[in-house]
Image (cartoon, rainbow, N blue to C red):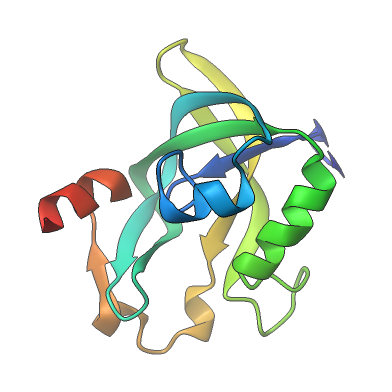
Length: 146
């Protein structure tokens, strides 16, 4: 997809779309060209009333995967429905899709990717229902719950 940062065909995932998680198989299996472990700036929460994570703007590190996808535009349309992203500026968006900077800490490289950032402005109970994940890894958070 063409953006102000050039043609971007990568996605940063930090929750149920990561490899081995419940939405990966449904939406991404067989479509991923490459996957790298990366981090980005933000704050990560677990939404206990919904059972999935929410990344918002912040200065912590959030850890996830940078994936390059076959048929990117069509997959992105499916993911927009999953993430309840209805278009830029739509007041009904649960998540906002935007381009972010990610750091591949294994190769010490910077890249750009789309990510779904939680639209905290549309959730008046966010901080009542959200559990802060200070170390920025939803997978590790879920392991601790077991």
